[in-house]
Each structure stands twice: as structure tokens, then as C-alpha cells.
Image 1 (spheres, one colour):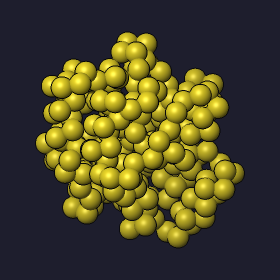
Image 2 (spheres, one colour):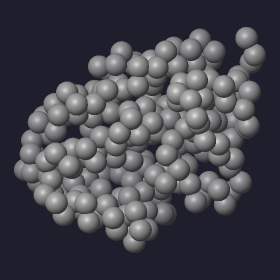
Image 3 (cartoon, rainbow, N blue to C red):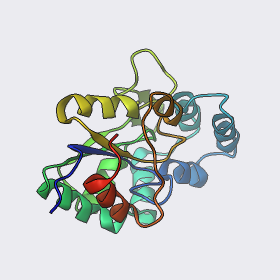
Image 4 (spheres, rainbow, N blue to C red):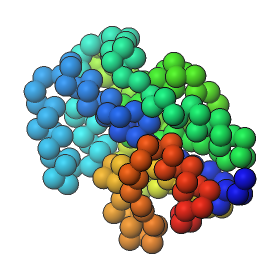
Length: 205
């Protein structure tokens, strides 16, 4: 087998490991219509994802257990992801998951899919009564995002050298990474096959 050219892979969750944005689907199911106008403000670049999350999350009044049950019943981790994690582990590649969504459903959904032993970086949210929001993986200066995925990548660069990041451009620090010279490439097949191909012989990140 060709030696991998990276030591770690950081993978986005919503829209990557899962085919939809689970946070948005929860909002569509449980929040009043105002959540969409807040989302449009984010899409237009008028607010950052952290402000968007807090304002949208504040509209949710349901117990967190109900929200989690909805996520588990209606959404599934891509069935190829477990195989990819197993393959990466055998190849000596660390796999981490970074999500800038509500976060509380990420680890339960991974466990349900049989994915164990991956590091997870998410926002810390609590719902039911008065929602609370904390950002343990935010950037110390820039507060645009809740989870700074660029910092997660840089953290692993220090330990493992080259790192592959897989995720949605808009929600994953695309502007910053582009201006700093990071190379991006789209996938046109399944995420699992794309990741394996790039990790084995694609451009260094």
C-alpha cells in the first residue's frame, strides 16, 4: 500500500459525514420561522456562525432529549465513514471530527454508527429551559465561528505534519484557508473514496 501523505484527517460533520445539516433540520422541525431569516443573514455574511448559532438556538424551547431523539431517528452517518475510520487507523492516520453546529448530537450519532475512538470538536450547547452556549474550541481572537476548524487543523499539523481537511467550504473557514495558501479540491464521488484517494496521493494541505 502506498504510504499516506498525511498524518491526520479532520472531517466536518454536517453535510459531510451526514448528508444534511442536522442543526438546520432540527431548527426546521422545532423552531419558529424566524430561524430562517437569521440563517439568511449568515449566508449573506452579515453575521458569523457563532452569532447565528446563539440566536437560532435561543429559539429552541424543547428538551434536549427530544432534539437528540429527532436527530437519531431522522439522520444517519454516511455508512462509508466507519470503514474509512477503520482504514485510517490501520494506516496510522488520526481521524478527528470538527463541527460548528449545535454539537450535542455528534457523538451519539457516531456511536450509533459504530464509530469509536475519534476525537470530536464541537460547540457546547444545552437545551431545555434556558439554552446555554459555550465555545471551547473557538479562536482566541476571531469570534466569527464557534469551532475554529482552521485551529483544529493547525493543532494537528504541529503533531503530525501534513493534515487533510474535508468539509463544506462556506462553514469551514474557506476565506482564511484560501488566503493562507491552503489548497482545496472538490469531490465528485463518495466522500469515503475521495478522502482515501486524496490521503494516499493527493495534494498536501
